[in-house]
Length: 219
Image 1 (cartoon, rainbow, N blue to C red):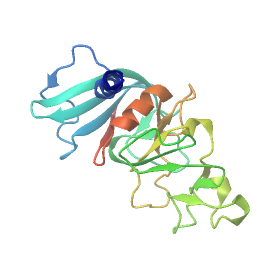
Image 2 (cartoon, helix red, strand yellow):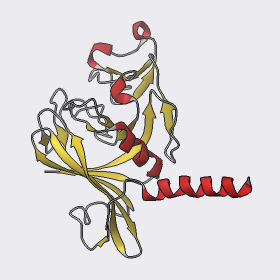
Image 3 (tube, rainbow, N blue to C red):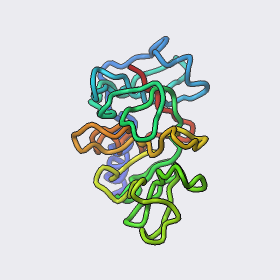
C-alpha cells in the first residue's frame, strides 16, 4: 500500500514538474524579454502573430539561464489586436510587462501559490471611470447596491472566468487608461483586451506560478 502511494505521488509530481512539456527544451541565452523583466524568474511570454491571435511560451529562469517549459500555446488577445497602451473602451491587449497579482475563478482553487478568490454572482470588476474609489478593482456587492455603475463594469460569474489571473495593467487606476485585464479561460473568440488560452493549460500554469511572476506581451 505504501509503495502504491509512493508511485502515485511520483506520478503527480512528474505531471507538476513537466507543466506544459516542451520537447527538447533547453536553456535560452537571451529571450526577447530578458532585459525587461527585472528579477522575475517566471515569465509568460505572449507574442502576436496577427490580428487577435498570438502564441504563448512559458519560461523559467534557473542557474543556467532561461528555459522554455511550454511553447507555442495558441492564444487569443483583443479583437483589435495589440496596442502600445491600454485604453478604456478599446478592445486591444496592451503591450508591455505586467505583474500577475492574484488568481480567481468560478471554479474552486486548483492549487496555486498565488492568492485565489472563488467568485460568484456578486463579484464584479469595476470599470466605472467616475468611481475612483473602486475603479479597476474587484468588488463584492449585490448589483442594486453596488457603489459604482455596473453597466460599465464586469460581472465575474461567467464561463470565461472559470480560471483567471489578474494582470497588473493600470495599477495607478487612472480613469481612461483601462480596467479588467486578465489572463483567463478562452471561449474560442477574441477578447476585449485580455489574454486567453484553453482552460486545461491555464490550470497547469496557475499551479506553477509563484508570486513575482510576470506576463510579457509584444507584437
